[in-house]
Image 1 (cartoon, rainbow, N blue to C red):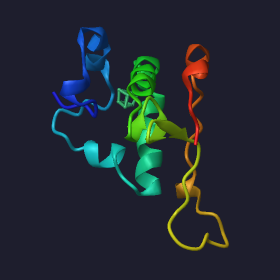
Image 2: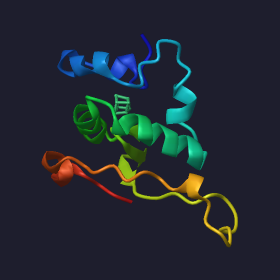
Image 3: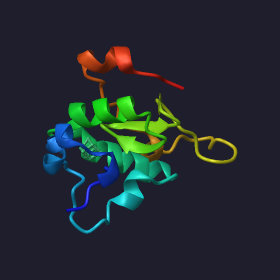
Length: 117
Ligand code: SF4
């Protein structure tokens, strides 16, 4: 089974990953969860928003200082959570709705672990 969570970073304590909504079984979602494109990042966050193991996933990503990708509904870069990301180049005069990230709340028990950029 494929998940965005690398096998070499899982332990018996991460058995929850079998319930991961990103477990497509064929690896097709990896490009979405590790994309630079804003619409892909937004799509990954929407998948996470309905994932039953989002809090466990986010906790693991925070503990591992994930270097990159969408984990637990949040976008990571160098172990920190990015609340926003801009498209390359000059910002458009008219905002593109597809570039807006869904706002995924961080579970209360994980707020103290949060590092933002
Ligand atoms: S929260 Fe997102 S990245 Fe984590 S297991 Fe669920 S779908 Fe996958």
